[in-house]
Amino acid sequence: MTTLWGGRFTGPTDEQMWAFNASIGFDIRLAQVDIRGSIAYAKALERAGLLSAEERAALVGGLERIAQEFAEGAFALAPSDEDIHTAVERRLGELVGPVAGKLHTGRSRNDQVATDIRLFLLEELPKLGEMVRHLQHALVEKAAAHLDALMPGYTHLQPAQPARFSHWLLSYFWMLERDQERLREIVRRAAVCPLGAGALAGNAYGIDREALARDLGFAGVTENSMDAVSDRDAVLETLFWGALVGVHLSRLAEDLILWSNPQFHFVRLAERYTTGSSLMPQKRNPDSMELVRAKAGRLVGNLVKLLTVVKGLPSTYDKDLQEDKEPLFDTVDTLAMALPITAGVIETLEVDVEAMRAALDDTLLATDLADYLVKKGVPFRQAHHLVGQAVRLAEEHGVALRGLPLEALQGISSAFGADVLAALSFEGSVEARDVTGGTARRAVEEQIHRARERLAAS
Ligand code: ARG
Image (cartoon, rainbow, N blue to C red; front, side):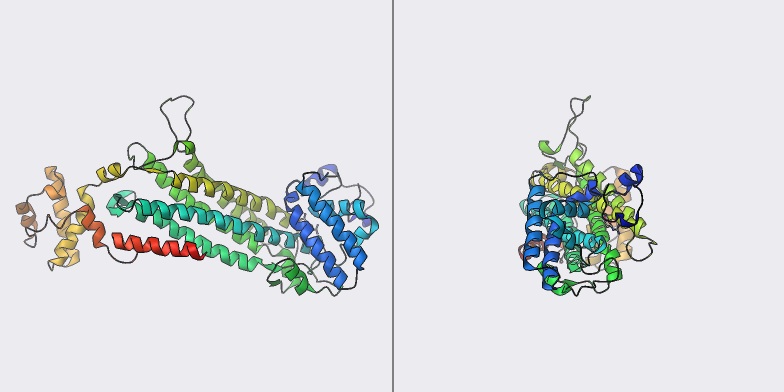
């Protein structure tokens, strides 16, 4: 087997070792970006006087043809193709002859693969951002459509205070908005070109790195060749980003799984996002959301995988870094499924406003009862305590909070007046919280307005 690096070897690589070492099985996915990098590098070599115009044209022509072969699924792998870089170079030799041997002048697979990965990120991250945006859009529009649906808001998964369903939907919009912000930062930092860093020490042929970087659409060049060939921060940040998006999606999924349970029945997932049971004929399971919940584990795992690989690596490039690609591809692919599925679930979600309303019970108004006393001049701490007594009394009598006779309330505190009943309602409760970020209709409308502004600006 002929390898790129065979000169100093006397015999073949162990067969198992060859398979263990090869990355073509997965880095073939970098074919197009690898070829783009090579085309730009051939032009840089010409500018540096290392290739004639004819040689450059031959190389670029050959590379374009290889790109075409990959695009058509016509590229034939050879047993000697260790990774995507060697596969392309091998094929280039077949197509254009010995001049192919000039392409790698001053370049190493170390700066080449670092460049490929960044080009891959710059291509894929905006697509993921677009998918997040689509989900955000679905959340905002659903919120706008259900402004008046009230439901119990929970803390500790225990009924806490009345809230608008739309407010709950929008809470996920803002999580995802922070993810969008983070994504822009990752893209910004990823947009520097490592090509010209060589194996670790830089390029000895006077390559114009800035022009090369511009040619490839990068915003700048890496500052240190030793760092450049081993820096996988952009990959790690992407994996962290994916993990956090996954965690956000998993929480949304969990809420919907719970609320689609018939005992809640607040929402119903569209049939197309559920599946049945092979044994129990009545079942309609929220598998879409269960899988989204589970994918978070996978996404977190990908992050931990690569962090663990990079930890303690001696500078600069080490073969360990070859392990960066599979978790990266998996995170990208996992999100590319989970995000549109979640958006689809939200878009098609049926909302049972009546069931939500039926779940509102008077204990959710306990805080409002305390607020009532505060308005009558009772210090909040004391009001809290007094309402606690009222809640206990109602429990003892088996009545709702608003079912307690005025005399009973006045037995607890003389601050309770005849106007107390009128002060207690679910609408009144959400409307009272008329601050930015609160549950009042006006506040939620303002939130929707700002959310739409963000979407329009991105
Ligand atoms: N397949 C390798 C990777 O993915 C390419 C770089 C190999 N460099 C080397 N010095 N062996 O990391």
